[in-house]
Length: 141
Ligand code: HEC
Image 1 (cartoon, rainbow, N blue to C red):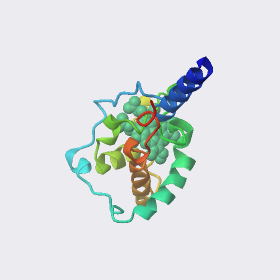
Image 2: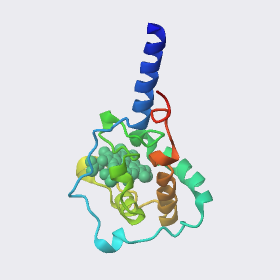
Image 3: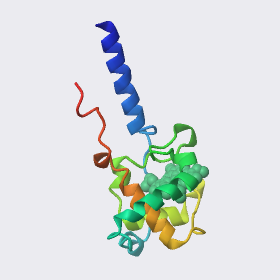
């Protein structure tokens, strides 16, 4: 009985950790794009298949700080990109933040990546939404 409970508990702890490795992350209120940038649409919105390439780019350029699953790494103080507070922002906001970075907080600017590659990454970031990656925390008792 105790063994089962322990296993269940550690499974829950692990799945929580996988969902939000930097759950304490708060979006910097001073890091805000101009209105026109917020409204920009992803030119790849009708090409969901481009997200696979976005994932490759993410693993190459972003995972060292954000983790392969985008959940953020506490030791890097990087954003948990799965958080709804992050996901609630527009595609244009993601694009602008990736392009310009937030140097004072340790997020580099990726203006050197071709624009379409940045949009491809934005497409991939949308696949990190918790709804797209359900965890057993909602299904297990
Ligand atoms: C050197 C580490 C590092 C790398 C590499 C990095 N980031 Fe970040 N990123 C951060 C940090 C730190 C923050 C939090 C900045 C803050 O506190 O405002 C952040 C924040 C973000 C945010 C904004 C979250 C919010 O609050 O709205 C997005 C989106 C993001 N990163 C995407 C990316 C993408 C996409 C890449 C790869 C192209 C990338 N990052 C590469 C460290 C990094």
